[in-house]
Length: 111
Image (cartoon, rainbow, N blue to C red; front, side, top):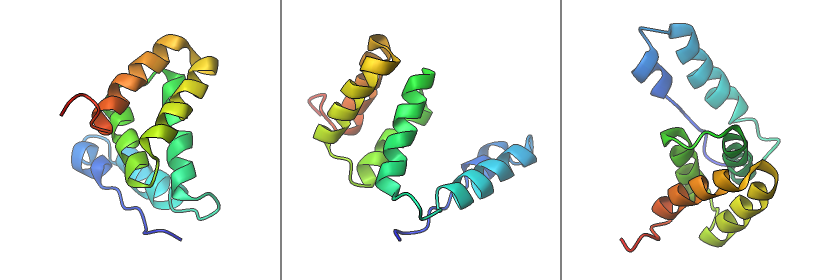
C-alpha cells in the first residue's frame, strides 16, 4: 500500500465553525476512505477528478485533486485522455474548464 494519506484542511479551515464536518472530511473521507487499500491511490485520484468534473466543480478543490493525481503518477498524457473521455459524458464546457486547470498543474502555460 502507498503512503498513508493524512488530511488536516477540515480542522484548519472549519474546525471551530463546523467541527463535525471537519471530522468527517479529515478522519472519515481522507482518513478512512482514501486509505482503504481496495483501490490504488492513482485510480482513486482519477475517479475523484472525474466525479468533480461531472459535478461541475472547477474551483480550487478540483485543482487540488488534479495536483494530487499528478503527485500519484497520473501523467499529462493520461490526464488529457481522462478529461477528453469524461467530457464526452459530462459535457464539453466542463472539459474546457478542467483543461484550463490541468494545464496549470502540468505547467503547460509557458511557465
